[in-house]
Image (cartoon, rainbow, N blue to C red; front, top):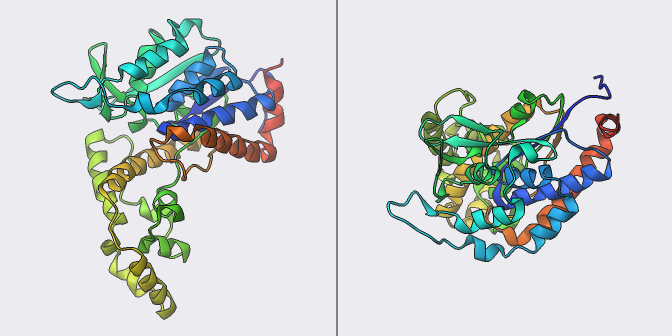
Length: 349
């Protein structure tokens, strides 16, 4: 692969709520390696961090802000209205975004920037390149069921992760020739089979024994991304059944030898409950977005995926841990990737 000195570099920053704070750690290390973007595209929390970075803030500046935000106060459901389209209208989040971004517009940013939202009526991707930066980021971060949809240009918009979790394609369309994609979503099994959860589902034992892989756990989710959002959501509902202990295929059970059976019996004794409602709902969203993310990353030149299974979707109080995970993952990838040195030079010319 050849890289010319004028190559445009793009950062594609994915969504993941609290896990998305790890983008800050990734950006810190990219700065250490003297890599700077020409283009940034973000989804959800990736849009928040991406907008701050595109405005000219250094990663260390963003880190200081992140570590001093009163996340618990921001997360409280307020301004609830009927009929309820979400738990909150997100006025506190809007106030925070305004304090961070001011009255910035896309045209005044240091780097070319775009963020992705989803039209909840049509299921279409909506990409923002201009207009109010705060409104665009707020719509990209509008997690379904938590924040009410944002109405812009007669369209009701929610989290962009439903259609484009890591907007590598948007970076490419904006002219980026070499793209660093950052995925902050752990694989589904890394979340549900995390030993710290205190449960050992039978499927986790099968994974450990090498009897099934993550791909099989995602097999119920279609790879046909051109289909309507409604049909994809139906598939997601079916995919959740994969995580219920009693739904293992008969053929799979027959392949277990006596030793495996003993291990499975032990697992069943340890697992005294099916996944909770919160686990199922959160995992449903994670399965969908993780599958989209893996598809998005196929066109990235460098992929950085911090290990974040110990950080819950809403655990913003673990911001320091998330940032550290981002730093660690970025260093591991950049130290080994052949493009690192070349990309660190291309922006100097």
